[in-house]
Amino acid sequence: MRVNNEIAMADAQPLEPKPLHASRLPNRREFLTAGIEASVAAAAMLRARPVFGQAGGGITPFAYRAPQSALDDLRQRLARTRWPERETVNDWSQGVPLAKLRALVDYWRTGYDWRRCEATLNRFAQYRTTLDGLGIHFLHVRSRHPQALPIIITHGWPGSVIEFLEIIGPLTDPTAHGGQAEDAFHVIAPSLPGYGFSDKPSARGWKADRIARAWTELMGRLGYRRYVAQGGDWGSFVTTTMAQQHARGLAAIHLNMPLVIPDPIPAKLTAEQQRAVDAMKRFNTDGSGYFAIQGTRPQTIGYPLADSPAGQAAWIYEKFHAWTDNQGDPEDALTRDQMLDNITLYWLTDTAASSARMYSEHAGLGDANNAGVVDLPVGCSIFPHEIFPAPREWAEKFFPKLIYWNEVERGGHFAAFEEPMLFVRELRNCFRALRRP
Image 1 (tube, helix red, strand yellow):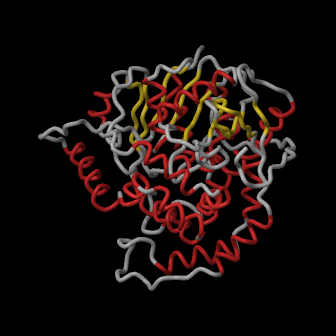
Image 2: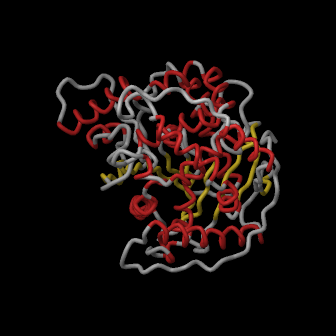
């Protein structure tokens, strides 16, 4: 096991979920509280009795506790940060403003509590297993509803399974969150190779196609014979590839970042298509510097990010500003604690370089614009502040079996993280017609 921190089994005590009135969507605090408590109960039941198969490979329960020395070292490094002078503009156009990052780092050092996040994470059922020679970490929370539909959800960069903590309860226990029993899912959420608590590949080759085959093996190992898959960012690549490979048991997929840019782009464009092209141009000219660096020199960028927590924070915080649906500050979309939960996971697991290599694995292949035709059923939810707001006309060309399309009222690239209630609604609506009677 290559997670270089203390591993400990966590005790999980069942908690009764707090039901919410079905006539309204819960607010974020109610949603988070009820969702996590419902998931705690499911995790406790799962640990109490095996409910999945282990054919072809062992599955080991997992929990994480960071060494106190690592947290002390983090605070010491933050206190010793050497700061540059402030930017010469009054906005984010040169990167994270000095005052914004200093405020975030000061809170990280003096007010943030990783143990809170750690305890929340450890209340979910987590496991590790070896897939194609690599140790992979995953959450696996089963619903108490017997007809629940299994779903494997894949994150991207700079994300992690922490993005999904608020949606697990509502997906697995919909009756406690304004839904019906027939909306229930069993949730499987792996950490990508080189991310979080999964192992770091020691050689090239872990691209989307290999990850897709590993995820197919994982679902079979868990005993699932029919399931669906969901993804955004790199998760969209992996999920789309699973569908193109006709992964064993995969019935349909859902994407919140469909990759459907035609090549070549048509000369005559509708207004919706022009908006998509304009967004792509803005990304290429003003937002893709990180992509070029991680796609060509992931090792080089790994050194400063592995050595400086302030640098690691800036590298991710800038994306929370650029890619969320906010009014000028990342904190409009996500709390400081939420952002630092994700940033701290990257820091403690030292995964800046290993996560960046995902970009170099795919560099130069031309697959950043589209992932090709999918002939399985596909659903798409388009959040308004997505990096690339895909037009439906283009999606229909790539997805001839497009079963669901919705343009959501708010939210951005980190859809499940920013708008968990809307994200859950989208998955329920997308896959409702595919459920067995």
